[in-house]
Amino acid sequence: MKIMIADDHELFRDGLRHVLEQLDGEVDIVEASDYPQALAKAQSDPGISIVLMDLAMPGMPWAEGLQALRQILPATVPVIILSASDDRRHVLQAVNLGAAGFIPKTSSSRVMLSALKLVMSGGVYLPPALLEQANDSNGLDHAMGNGDASFLTPRQREVLVLLGQGKSNKEIAAALNLSPYTIETHRRNLHEKLNLHSLAELILYAVRKGVIS
Image (tube, rainbow, N blue to C red; front, side, top):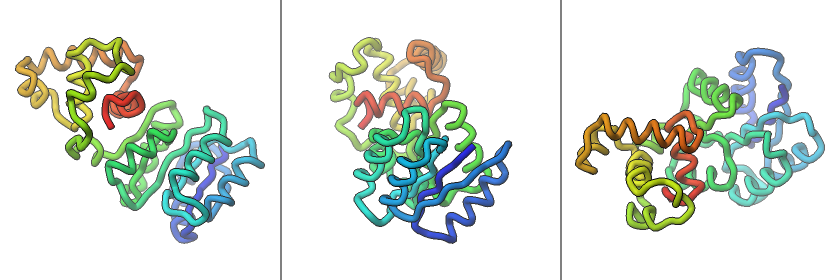
């Protein structure tokens, strides 16, 4: 497996190399220290299977760099953001631009490895802070009027929005005047209807469809 580490701090790249050595199987590391290098290596090396990328690198604004990298790489190659910030706005914007995960640099090596394995298995990793922070978007009324998720029932969309605000089943039940068992049923139905297998994937779907912004 060939992994590209794109980060302008050599010390961090060295540390991440040691973490990646704990992955199963042989790992081949490709390094880049700025956006132009990352784009050039992504274009010249078709063997790259996953990219770990810092947001704050020289060469271009991070959103532009992520979009350019996403256009070069095949859709099957996930790009995971490694950042010193887990600001909700950055997380959501990165996901909207095609990132398959967002790992804060403050995460332990155990968390990083678990997140990588989740993404490599087809899942999505989002930081706990995304689930803990209150939704600062236009709110439930905007989400309910969004046609992108129109095949969901109004109640399912309500539950999905509140899940995106980091609320527990009990809190959602209280907000909607329903039982926690009913909320769990709605969550199960959302997973089945959308063919998604985790809360992170549900939130990612909601972000990309505009239900949560």
